[in-house]
Image 1 (cartoon, helix red, strand yellow):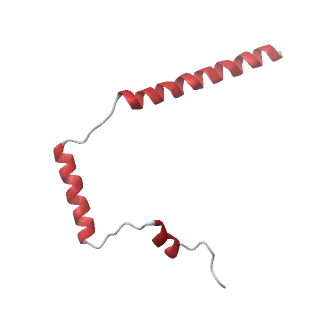
Image 2: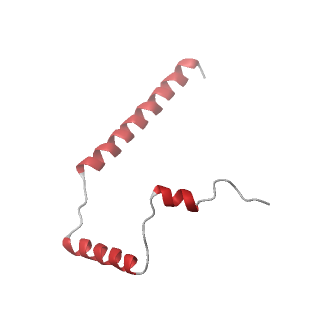
Image 3: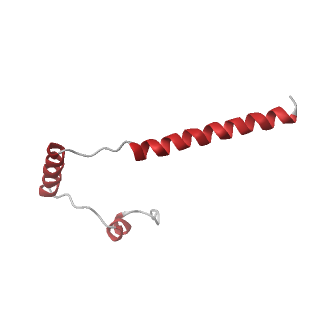
Length: 74
């Protein structure tokens, strides 16, 4: 194989990757999904059930207190 065909192959690969990336970006902007009223209702009921059972969302301070980043003492 000569160097020119390797460069052409690489250029085709990069072009195909850019086209695929562009299609993926445009697809996300062209087709969007919105919940209907029934889905919003179910999501709200599920959140209320979690909070009633004692679930609370942790902020970064709570996570830093409970995570083991310093290792364990032997």
